[in-house]
Image 1 (cartoon, rainbow, N blue to C red):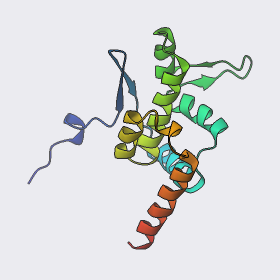
Image 2 (image 1 turned 90 degrees about the horizontal axis):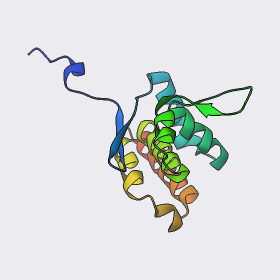
Image 3 (image 1 turned 120 degrees about the vertical axis):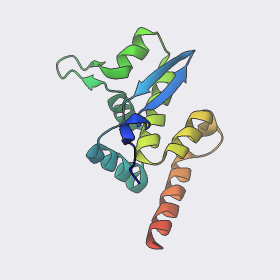
Image 4 (image 1 turned 45 degrees about the vertical axis):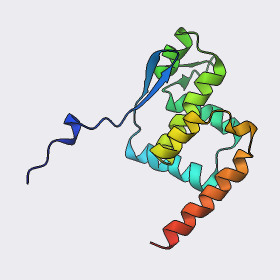
Length: 138
């Protein structure tokens, strides 16, 4: 049986609908995805690093001279005057989508207010322990 070229029907990018527009976060390469996965599962993502990672995954880079961020879908979001919490939520969702699983990313997207109801650090640690347990059983 001949398989179809994956590129003809599979889209690895993440498409996030915000205010009637869809923003596309390109899929990272394998090394970057592996780095994200290690950070999300093994170390968790400290709050300060979350901002850096959220902007980075949205394609922004920091200008060392000015300290300003620009580039990628981040620029598109800023040009569309999205508020910071929406941009940050989009970046965190992409981190979880590519660094953990698409299903967890979707859950994070839908449960934007979850952080107000549960301790996300404890939840992340519990998921990390669960994944380590699952991996040890394989």
